[in-house]
Length: 299
Image (cartoon, rainbow, N blue to C red; front, side):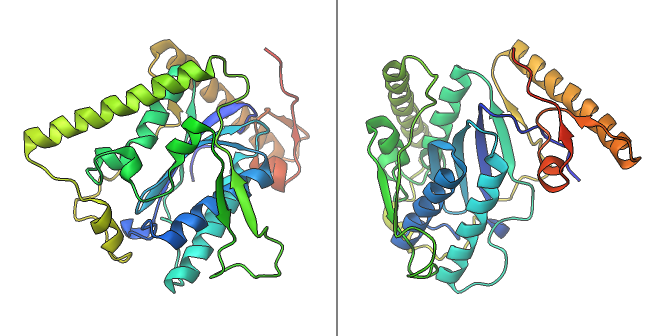
């Protein structure tokens, strides 16, 4: 059982999840790209989250979100469920699509940390030597949509959803930075520069090591049943906080530790039949057991 995690409105979250057995179940063919954007947009609209950026690689995805109302777990549950069912219908599969390991959910603390994560997500295919430039990746071009403000449109996948069902025939996804973020134009300009710098650095590194990229055509020709031949790292740390600032990291980890202590104390009393208020940010027991939760404290 994993440690409890507070769910608080107003946080920026990086969500990462991989496919079972590292299979290429998200190979970026046309149907998969459309289904990913459709399920992502529909879930974001349903649960009132802002998608900042996403990246759909062959066997995992990274998605950065702004959770204004503390509904990220509901969004994640719905998005992963719908995407898995849609892909299983497309591939003719029946077993689980996503890995059984816990989804990686990381809180992004500062503006500089957000910039780091956006660069990391956008350049993932380049760093993996799949393509030379970010825009060469055959998956959905999320970085272009973020930098230009263009809406991404997707139609309801006909291979899974009913024609007369409740799901919308078409959805639009507009990637956006949080409304409270100042200096957006400068921030996006820095993001563009950082992405270009990573592309150039990866090119120099490949030339130094005499490596070649996989390329778009080969990626699209791969079987979705395949998986990487490299050994998978296991039992690594699973961070919950992302920040380069030492003192911000200490403060955030201490805040999380204090919340977990308060949560466990409240849970022990609740199991004994004592009426108790759980700390603000308690999610699962509030949603499914209707426990009382303390009001949010204004800083």
